[in-house]
View 1 (tube, rainbow, N blue to C red):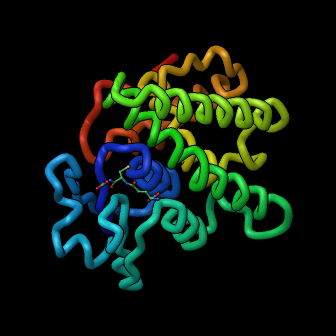
View 2: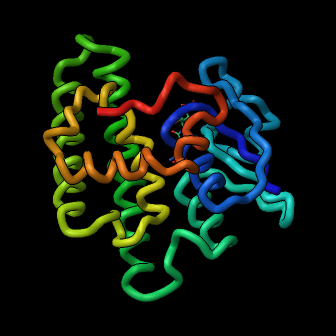
View 3: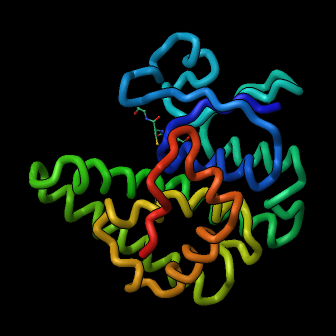
Length: 209
Ligand SMILES: N[C@@H](CCC(=O)N[C@@H](CS)C(=O)NCC(=O)O)C(=O)O
């Protein structure tokens, strides 16, 4: 049994989608970051960076924060969605790190400046939008060569898809990235993704371009 501490954000959804994909039983503990619950001392014990998501594995007592580390842990625990060796193993790590170091932080800045604070910092809006579009271009090129980011569907896709699902917030037209669009729709069709998307709060629906 996994205890999942999360909220309805791209980083949170990575883990609920993963748990649904691998079929591990889990209990959801909503941490409402709009109310500051991420600063509660009991949450800080398992997530000292005061951010969601975090998990506790009741089988082992291990607690983990950082979504990339959690995805790797759950993949290793179940033997699913992360090839164990060879090129496929490292391609998965490579694209997972690309998401963690690029897509997450940069798209996060687009959400901050373009969605929530439009007009306050035009330079930042332009800078982060340009970088997000560059990253979309990199992903589109990759997905012209392979079906999923690391070849097979993997934790790299699960890390990236929830950020792309906020394309409307980013002002991005996915039709400009036809390979990303194909990949986005294929993942949106997965029943586990549809279940994981609505954790912990039911949403109207998955945005479809
Ligand atoms: N690198 C971290 C980022 C986590 C993160 O930024 N979480 C956001 C929600 S998507 C959060 O908890 N924000 C609360 C805050 O900024 O205080 C991860 O991938 O887990």
